[in-house]
Length: 162
Ligand code: FOL
Image 1 (spheres, rainbow, N blue to C red):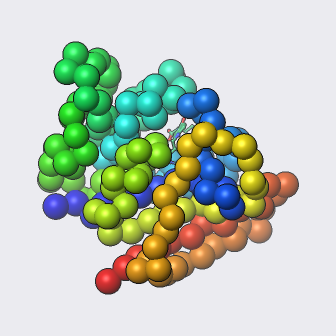
Image 2: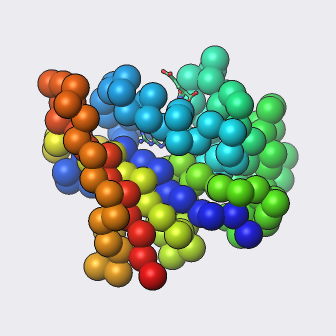
C-alpha cells in the first residue's frame, strides 16, 4: 500500500474554497504543492478535478485519479473510481498517494491518512468548503515558515501520528 498523504492549503478558520475555487493565489504554495506531488499519484474528488485550470488538467507528471459516483463520468487523462476505497486500490502499487481534496474527500480520507501536509494560511476568508478538524492524535512533525512568506502569511506544517 502507498503512503497516504493529505495535502491542502487551509486558512485559520479552516476555509479551503468557495464557489469551487481556491481563496487565494500564492505562487510559493503552488510550487510547494507541485514539488511534493511530482512523480507520485494524486487522488481527488470530481469537483476538484473540474476546478483545475484546463492547462493543468490532468496535473502533469503525476498519475491522476478522480472519484465520481457517476458511472458515465469522463475525465480525460485521469483514471476513474467510484469510491475513495476503489481509488486508493487503483494506487496500490504507488509509493506515495497524495489526496488533494476537496472537502468531502478530505473528510473521508482523514481516517486513512499517514501524514498531513498543510499550508496554514493566515486569513479568515468567507468560504463554502472546509478542511476537517485535525484531531489531537496528530502531531506536528515539522513546521517551516518561508522567509518570503510575503503579504499573505503562511507556513508549511507536516503532521504525523503513531
Ligand atoms: N495543497 C496546497 N498546499 N495548496 C493548494 O493550493 C492546493 N490545491 C489543491 C489541493 N491541494 C493543495 C487543489 N487545487 C492546481 C490548481 C488548483 C489545485 C491544485 C493544483 C494547479 O494548477 N497546479 C499546477 C501548478 C500551477 C502553477 O504552477 O501555477 C501543478 O502542476 O501542480
